[in-house]
Length: 187
Image (cartoon, rainbow, N blue to C red; front, top):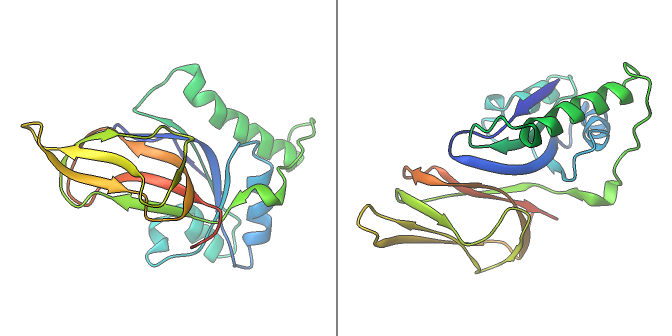
């Protein structure tokens, strides 16, 4: 099962593939993710309310599932949707549905989870880091401002070392995701 995401109107992300680890169907899901050709592969632990995530729900129920993602901001240019098409074709190659060969990514390049960082207050977000940046604990990732231009929140990196994979832009409501980080381990 392939759960295809392309960001939303307020989020933009780097191209990545993610699968759920630690389940009976996880080994096959890992192979699917490794064969997508995505530059970032993530193994995520099953979390509470994972039934809300299609690829996790599928994997929990014995069907290898992955999520692939690229783009955002409702952009439709070739550079934003082509990676998703390529990932699907690469999976088809791996499954023998297309004749070409795809070589998998190395397992040591797999990230071990995503840190989802919400904002605590609403406001207009201004990112201090770019997608693909490596960040460290305590580093300012983004700032939120109210409609009068007053700083209302600074969002800082809560983990030792991570890669910025997705961030928001525009207006956020309290509790909405501001930024997502890829983790090398679950620390």
